[in-house]
Amino acid sequence: MRLSLRSAALTTLCLALLCLGACVAPAYPPSTPPAEQAQQVFLLLEGEHTGVVLPLGPERWVEYSYGDWGWVVEGKSSSSYAMYALMNATQGALGRREIEGAPRADPIYEVRGTSFQPFFAERDRVDALLQRLEEEFHRDGQTPFHNRGFDLHYVPALHDYELDHHCAHATMEWLNDLGCETNPGGIVRSVKLLGITPLEASPRVGGTAGSAQSVVASPMSE
Image (tube, rainbow, N blue to C red; front, side, top):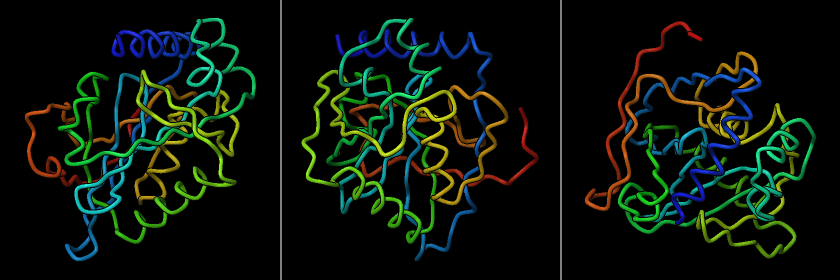
C-alpha cells in the first residue's frame, strides 16, 4: 500500500511537470577529498523525487526531503492540486527520517522503491549542511507531522513550494552546499548525479553503504 500510494502521488506530480516541459537537471559530484576529510553521503532517488541522506554518527543516518505541505501532510494528491501547487506559492514542508545501519539495507526504502547515488564530500561541508537542516527542522519546538506512508516527519519549511522551488530545487541547493555543481537549465522536474550508477535499496546489503564512484568533470549536457 505504501508503495502504491507513493507511486501514485509521484506519478501525478511528474505528469504535471511533464506538461510544463520540465527536464532532469544534471549535477556533478565534487572531486573526492583526501581520506581524512572525506565523508560519504547519498543522493536519494524515488522516481522524480529526490532528497539527501547525511551521517548522524556511527551507523546512523538521516534523510532530508522537501515537498508541498498540502501534498505530504494534508493528503492533497490530485492532479489538479499538483498543478495548483506548482503554479502558486504554497507552504513548503521539510521532511526528516532517521536510519539505523546501512541506508540501502533499510526495508522502508525497498518498499518505497528508493535508489541511492553515493559520493564523497568534504566533512566540513557535510557538517555545515546537517547543522543548517537540523536547526530548521527543530526550530521553535515544532511538533512534526508523521506521514506513515513515506515514514517521514514533516515541519513547515522556511521556503515556499512553487514551480521554481520544489523538491528538485531544494535538493540541488543541498548538493551545491556539499560541493556539487548543478545546472538547472530551465524548468526542472528532478536532478541526478552524472557518472554515478544508482544503487537500489535491498535488505541484503551489508556494511554502511555502497562505494562512491569518482568521476571526471566534463561539459554540462542537457
